[in-house]
Length: 574
Ligand code: GLU
Image (cartoon, rainbow, N blue to C red):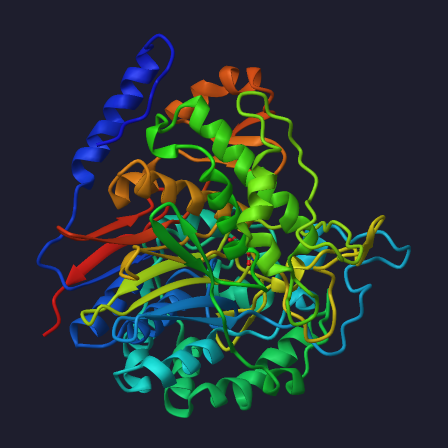
């Protein structure tokens, strides 16, 4: 079993940290040989809803729908039917991987100055986030309906039962939900959210308070009965549009036509080999898949399995590989239906081999410039989208061996802070670059009518050389998602950590700038050593929400991020 190297003279802090870590390791060994299905999700009630569908013989997609509906209710800060998502589906029979894009779209009426003030300067982030101007057409319901059409086993309407029951009977506000309600300045400024989440004196409802949401129960019933059409065509769509356009502070441009025009899209996955494995993710409009694969392929240059996990050497190499990938991300990635993305070039062995040579192990030359993956590339500028962590990820394996990896988001914590039909509306449009152009030309991720904002969400699956599924993984965390998933994959594949240990391993993140080390972990002690290598080190809280499953010879091995409230549940179908 791998452990972290604590390079310098042991101090009491290190000894304490190491003992805690070993304890974690000991409790984390959970390969479950007799279990046929498994779900890892960010909230116990949501995971239970998914588990119940799996126990009834439902498919991974059935479980994903039940889980997402409950998350809409119990984790409204992160995801819901007012948001967007990406879903990977692996079919165990055909051994095919399908990817579904349920990303929000910009209203048809937006212009490229959407996030600029009248003097041409960029709006401040929260000025743009809060209110209707940031709301894109939600994609989650269309995505789930499409996936269910192809891969559902249980009736659509049954999948809403757990969420309807909980919305009617109420659920207990969790510690994290209360904490986020308490510290949010904006949510209580919006009437619907203020009444639902706060007391009359403006204080946040306490942890343990039973919260009922009859409006959401009614919304769920309509979608359960009427399918996705009830969301995009009927009263729900009307309520969304009225809320967005009627916001008095920052009205949006969404129309009923935007709602009815929405389509979830099946896209080609992006895949690349990593040592003996095959790693697959979601293609554009998320940058997650391509950036993760670029970093992994660059890391193939070094013999990662022989490098000490958590050592300054390992962190330096992973940081430089990640920084190289992020340099390209800023320039080339966005919605591939609007811009020409040189995916093949960006992932080619030759190009990445050349990129890897720019890294200088032990003497960080950061930041890197974007490369030139194809000879004739129009001039593109760097973007300045800001991404902050909320979002949720769940991983599911059903008893037939089919799997779902889904990352789902309302973008910022509580999205735009607007609610319609009992759920939060996203602020996903602020994932576009606020400036449409930069010195070098138009920005790939600039806002345009009907376009999808670039994401960092990285739902991922790993396969062995024979195409057998080995791992399902993903995380929230804004653009740090990519680094969280990258570390976990290396820890698991190269350093043989079980899923829980790989997830819990302290984070180190580089997005082609500072090197973030996770505060209050032994890694923070490596600051001086990494600074001596030329890194601009920042020790900070890194709030991932990794949820993963490994399929091993000895059984299923699940992990839920100790940094959030998630759980792993498993069982055998009835
Ligand atoms: N909106 C971000 C994205 O799509 C995710 C935000 C988060 O993880 O908190 O990449």
